[in-house]
Structures are given as C-alpha cells and as structure tokens.
Amino acid sequence: MSPGTNLGAQRLPPTREGAFSAPILPLELRDVCYEVGGARLIDGISLTIETGPRTLILGPNGAGKSLLLRLAHGLLRPSAGQVLWRNRKIAGAGRGPRRQAMVFQKPVLLRRSVRANLDHALALHRIGGEERRQRRREALQATGLSDRGDQPARSLSGGEQQRLALARAWALKPQVLFLDEPTSALDPASTRAVEEIVQALHAAGTKIVMTTHDLGQARRLADEVVFLNRGRLLEQGPADRFFTQPQSREAEAYLAGELLW
Amino acid sequence: MNDLLQAFGQALRLLTSLDASLLEIIALSLRVSLTAVGLAALFGLPLGAAIALFRFPGRRTAVVLLNAMMGLPPVVVGLVIYLLLSRSGPLGVLGLLFTPTAMIVAQFVLVLPIVAALTRQSMEDLWHEYEEQLRSLGSTPARAIPTLLWDGRFTLLTAILAGFGRASAEVGAVMIVGGNIDHVTRMMTTAIALETSKGDLPLALGLGFVLLTLTIAVNGAAELVRRWSKGWTG
Image 1 (cartoon, rainbow over the protein chains, first blue to last red):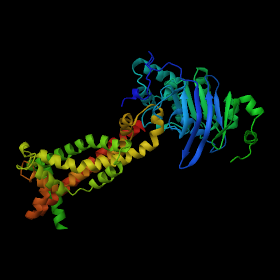
Image 2: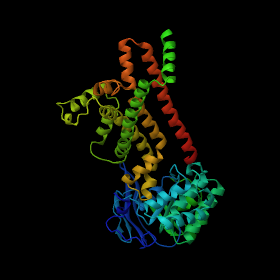
Image 3: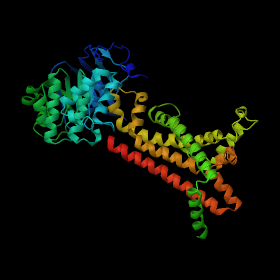
Image 4: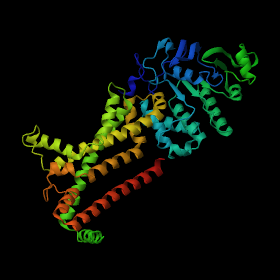
C-alpha cells in the first residue's frame, strides 16, 4: 500500500513539483448526514464551497463544526449523502486526498526535530531532493520557525507547535486548507501569528475553510460565513451580511452572545 | 550469610582472574540471548504494530492469544522444540539439537510474544493519538507502521528489555534443547542449576552474581541510550 494509491479511482499524474495541479474545487456536500449510535450529529447539510473567499464555519459548541470539516476533508464517511470534489467522489474516505490539508485544534507532532516533521509530510507526498529542501525552507520562513529546524518539535511552545502544524500544511501547498479551531488553546500573541499565517496562505491562493468559536476572529478573517446549529446548516453567505443582518433567529441570538442549544 | 560472602569472594576471584571457562559461559549466554532478542525485535516490532493498526477478522482473539503467550512456560517451549529438532522429529535432519542455534530458537519463541504484545499495546495507544493527523497527511496504516515504531522508540526499548529479561533469566528451555554441554551449550543459568545440584553453592552464587550484574549493565546501557537520544529528539 503505497501512499500513491490513496487518491482513489482516478489517479492524476504528479506535476513537476510533485503536487497534483488539477483544481479540486468546488467542494459540494449533498444532503450529508452523520450519525453515531443513532444520534444524528450532522443533519442533511447541503452546501457548496467555491474557490476564493475565506470561509468560516461558525456555530455554538456541539453544532457540528468539527464534524463538518472532517467529513469534507474525508476523515469521516457520511452516514448518508455525498461529498463531491468537482462532481467527483474521492474514494476511500479519510485517505487524505492530496490537494487538501488540515490543521487540527491540537496539532499532533512527531517526536522528532521540526525539520523531520516537515520531511515526513513531504515524503508522504513523494516530494524529495531539492524540491523538498526548498519547500521546507519556505515553510519554515513563512511561519517564523527558520531558526528552529533542529529543535525537537515536542519542545516547542504551544503557539510554535501550531505554527509548525501550519508550516507542515504550507509545505504541501494544498489547494484547500481546513483549520479546526486552530487558535482555541493559544494566547493572543500566538493567535495573531496564526492568523497572519492563515492570511498569507490565503494570499498565496489556498482556499481557507476554518471553524472558530471566537467571533472577533471570525470578523477579522471571514469573507464568507457558514452558520451551523445542532447539526443543521442555517445560513451561508457573505460575512458582512451575516454579521449585520443575520437571516435566522438562531444566528441573531448567537451574534448577540446568547446561549444556544 | 557465610555462603553469600563466600559467593561474592568467589565471583570476584572468577572475574578478576578472567577465568577462561567462565568467560566462555558468559560469552555464550550473551550471544544466545542477544541474538534471540534481536531476532524477536526484528519480527516482533512490525508484528505488534501490524496487529495494532490493521483491522481483520479474529483480531481480538489474536490479541488475547498473543498476550497469553507472554506467559509460555519455558520448559514446555523447550520440550516442543526438542521434539521438532530431535533426530526423529520433522526438523531432525538439520541436526540442530544441543547446539547454540537450538537455544536461540527456543529463546526467540519465548521472547517474540513479549516484544510483540507490548509493542501492540503501545502502538495502539500511539495510533489513537496520531491516526487523524497521519491520515490527513496521506498516510495509510501500512505506511504509518515505521512512523509509529520510530515515534514510540522509547517505550519499545522497554518492551525489548522485558524480552531480554526473559531470555537471560530463563533456564528451562535452553536446558532441554541445549543439553548444558560443557564448552558447547553451557549458559550461565544452566551452569547455576548444575552447580547447585552438585552442591557447589559458592560457584553457583558467584555465577548468579555475574548474571545479575550483566542484566543491570544491559538495562543501564539502555537507559543511557534512551536519555542521550531523548535529549536530541524530545
């Protein structure tokens, strides 16, 4: 089982850079449901995510934000409905389709040096030689970790660990980057650093799809908002409109800081 | 008490005089046990990791059996291998009975389940922590095996040491398949058993003292390696 078999039925040839260059967006979810032990945690969500705007997924705790990301990323298989990339189903849910990456709330770093963590991810994507060295350098530079290459990854501070997780995603040059509350455990300075890296990725053309429960962060970063409550999609639209004229009563209450359940 | 003091004296005398037959016994013991443990690690680490990461029918049963095999009685293992290797046995043509190779095989069989079972447990815990991240990065369970083995190296060192403990302390299996032949298959444990039954308690205790010291030395060396590399890789 080589990593190259993961993409599923239709394998695309690697480009000279070792990445897959054919565009994968739009991402379309059709009536996606996700159930665990009879409880419907994601309830019939249909939405389309296009190239371009930074999409932020908002909603109270338990709304299904993280599950939605995992379903879209392919880590979870929907109980019903379909997840389509450019109208194509990517077989083998969770096998990490190569042109998308994910940064988790709590990054899992290997017990190796910072550099070896990047090398591992690049090796999985079959990127070696000079290309690997260059991407590693770029990613460390972009995340401000250039002087940390030899340090054990687990000895970094929380903020630096999350930056390394972003560097790892950066090195893979994904078309789509999912971020699951990447700053929820970080102090303001680290949060700011992470937001700047996310901005830079966006500027470099990576589609950002991110969850947060921090409304301030959502206002700073969002171009488009997807609002969930209790596993259902209540709103999707431009950020300005969502923040000034929410369409649903729940979104209005959420923005007003009321507790939703 | 007198016996113990005498034993220390005897052990020191044997060691300081670099008694040839004692050194021969120590060398053979180390050769057999370290080879068996090395082979058990070579096969046991990937085996344990595979059972931890792959889902297949009968997996639970395999885990229970593997755990149970950690407690294999050495004499029974010795007996089975004796039957396999004896002249009339299916592997008799190899002529391995009463050779160091037979002892390595016996200890390998004893150590393999220990290394594999402890590896399985620690790899399962690690996989639980790493799975989402590794799958997200594009790793398959098969590709994750080397990644996890390397990241769990400090825990796995303990598993290997547990295996070495078993091998170096074990007497039943090597006695049966090796035969405790002087200058050929005499190990520390079999020599201790022999000297005790002959009534030469000081020599037996002296050998025991040497065995204990070697075991502590091996574990101490492993701890040093662990500390040294942990300083580098966190």
